[in-house]
Image 1 (spheres, rainbow, N blue to C red):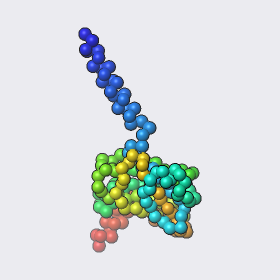
Image 2 (image 1 turned 135 degrees about the vertical axis):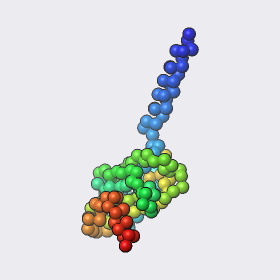
Image 3 (image 1 turned 90 degrees about the horizontal axis):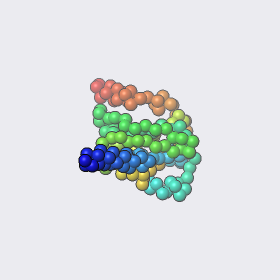
Image 4 (image 1 turned 60 degrees about the vertical axis):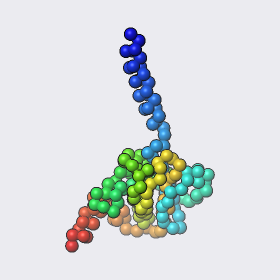
Length: 164
């Protein structure tokens, strides 16, 4: 008689443990910071470098960061978006199969009115919180028209360019 009662309790306990295991973890999260610098660029650095204050620069709040899968194909897809906060920090949930462990090229694009767009074509590191994305933005104000166009508009322009 106790066997039928133990099975539902066991299943409930296992389900709770699985759900709690994913809560509060950095799994599938890409963290980063957007800073003002002398030269534009982006790179992945150890999270400890950012925490220890080894990397300095003025924070850029309000920068939009996008993560694009298959950036060199017409099947490209924006899988995650984030906006930097008052400290220049951002976090985005990367809910895409294979992100961080499959060998594939991704595009990180960062835009902010008043700065030229920064792009990084690279494979993603493991999304376990050990590495963060550092985006340096420099330069003077440029036309913001190029910064606000959507991914669909970029694809349409590329199709028009190659259709000629």
